[in-house]
Image (tube, rainbow, N blue to C red; front, side):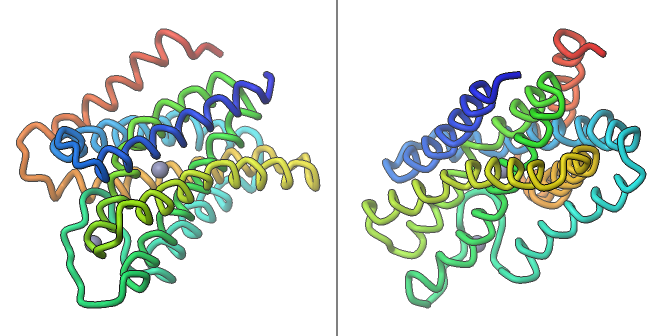
Length: 246
Ligand SMILES: [Zn+2]
Ligand SMILES: [Zn+2]
C-alpha cells in the first residue's frame, strides 16, 4: 500500500495532537472534562489490538518476536519513567517552584519519545499490513487530543507564555514523523526485521495501554470512565468485524 496513506495518517494524528494542545492554550473547557474518556477508549482499543493481532501475528513471522515485544515495552519504560521521571497523561496538576524549562523538559522528553514510538508502531504495522495499520491509527488517534492537552497544560503550569507553549506543542507533533524515518531506516538495513518490528510495535501498544493510559483511567473519579475502557474493546471488535479480514 502506498506510503502516501501512511503519511496522511501520520499527519492526521500529529494534527490531532496539535489541536489538543491548542484547545488548552486557548482555554477551551470541553477537552479537559472529556479527556479521560478518550484515554479509556484508546486503552481498551490498543489492549485488544496488541493481544489479539499484533503480538500473535508477530509470533507467526519471527521466532525472536517475544524478545522484540519485551524490547518495545522496556525501551518505552526506560525513557518515560527511568531516564525522565515526570511523565503522565492528562492535565498537569503539579506545581513546582522550579525554572520553566526544568519543569517542562522531563515531561516533554517523555512525551516526545512516546510520540516517536507512536509513529514507529503505526509505520511498522502499516508497512507490514495496511489493514492492521489502520487499526493502529484508530487506537492512536483516540488518545492524541489528550496528548496535546498534557503538554500544553504542563507549559501553563510552568508559567510559560502561550506563544512559547505553542512552539512546544508544535515541536512535540513532529515526533511521529521521526518514527517513520526510524522504521524506513531499519527496514532498509535489514528487511528480515519485519516480524521483529511487528512484535516491537505490539510491545509499544501494550506499554501505552497498560502503563500510560490505564493508570490515568484508574485515577479518574468519574463513574463512566472505567466502563469506557470496555467501550474501547468493543469498538475494536466492531471495526475488526467490519474492516479487517484475513
Ligand atoms: Zn505532573
Ligand atoms: Zn501516544
